[in-house]
Image 1 (cartoon, rainbow, N blue to C red):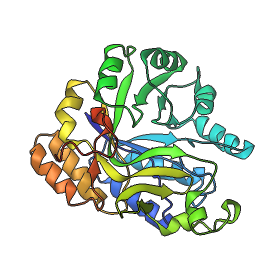
Image 2: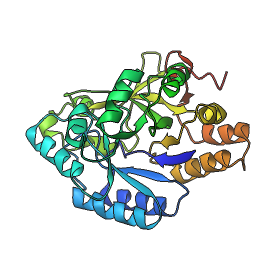
Image 3: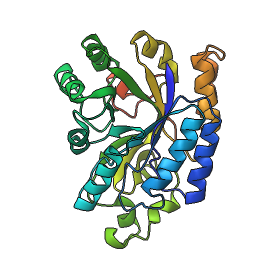
Image 4: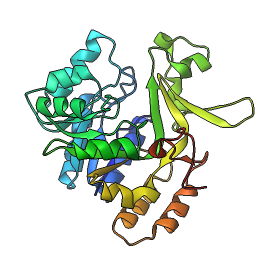
Length: 297
């Protein structure tokens, strides 16, 4: 199986972003996704910057994919998405059906986790449009994936979100701005104060959700390293790690060593637990509530 790093979901400083991807050039990942998926207002990097980073990664032997917004709302955002679709250099990950329509019949592309691929009929429709790989929606698990893999179109690859806070939902409202009592249109980019998102607790002080601008994520970190054998048996082609503000180099190395058989799975799982502040989850994978942690039972 190949190892991918998904698109950056948080607002980091421009210099931090360039440094992060410079380290990825020297890492043992195979596929790197670039671009803004969450909020169109985050313009610290322009498309030309992402293309420059992509060229560096490609020069280091990485497969580069440009990701589109999951919730485009304005004509300007559609224009930006169109420029990504027509970049002519790198594969594109479509995160909504608008992007699929822009790409259909023109180039081969990737279906992101925000497109609802719940059955073989949908998968076949997307394959006919030109999709070459799909990312399993994070709320689905092994049972659904088994059924999809049994009916997967010829040539279609499968990718699974294996590590990171789960992207659960998007809204026109900016939750982080609301938490700071500022309007979305004058948000002052307060989400940049939270490089790993703003953690939301229950009244009992239990971690519940993570606010990331217009995106809601899980509080706990999806961690499927204990499922690597199952993922291999299901003929999954790529496993995705979501960018983290801390410990990313070690996370990549741990997954790579486990995939290569150089680190026993129990030891790899223990190493990752030390890097996660608010606990892990794998509930969706086991058809349970998403916040459950079956591997740690």
